[in-house]
Image 1 (cartoon, protein in one colour):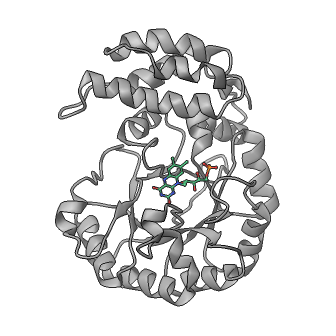
Image 2 (tube, rainbow, N blue to C red; image 1 turned 180 degrees about the horizontal axis):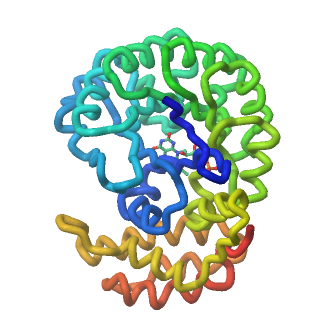
Length: 328
Ligand SMILES: Cc1cc2nc3c(=O)[nH]c(=O)nc-3n(C[C@H](O)[C@H](O)[C@H](O)COP(=O)(O)O)c2cc1C
């Protein structure tokens, strides 16, 4: 089974990155409405010591983006609990389990999970192996290039490969880097030259040019995009258009539809007020990460609207000039 197939025009497999907080269910749903990516990964489900995996797993909804598959990501350090959690998620219909070896948050790393697994390739191997053995569905790893530095980089990717995971997604920054220095794409090329399993490249893809450049310069087998998709929800379509040669030109109305899908009501969904807060969270992220929009951020965050549509009518015109969805 080729887990990372190219599309009919030769475009490599494209994934929407997990982004805890910002990339929540509302965002994923709006992204699925726009489409263009082949699979999404849900943000991590924490598996603490003494976890009740059955109740933890309930927040994962396999058909949330149907027909687009949604992989489940788990984060923890206890091999047995991680295996139990993977089984539970597999029973809930997860098409794939991804093991988080990248989260830099101190509350996570303090318990030895996330990027802390990169401190010792043997532990990384043990945790991944336990998950691989527990389920029949594919297991993958998403990792950073190291904890404090990249001294264990090669050992870690080889430990991951030897654990039996089907492929690795690499975000080539160390835990200590956070999101600061540019992602080291040279490490994606290095990993590609070492590994025999497929590799997905991730980190700092904001435009079609970036995407093509990562693919050409690293030889990776697929791309995962996180923040670039928040800044431009049409980026996946634009990458596909590069291969199909059929231009994809998003219009302002498409952006409105994206936000309408973001706040759309579904059974058991958030209150109107909460939907405004979710919008503020998303827009706050976009305004902060865009030099042209930064100064208007506070204006958007302090708006007093309680109705999502009224809030959008106020906030979207502020976006119109600076948002980067036009940049390819
Ligand atoms: C707000 C935020 C939350 C994130 N949450 C997760 C997560 O739950 N699991 C994970 O593996 N990576 C997480 N990441 C990392 C991203 O998936 C991705 O690896 C990173 O942002 C680099 O890719 P990008 O430059 O395309 O954003 C998160 C990143 C951000 C910005």
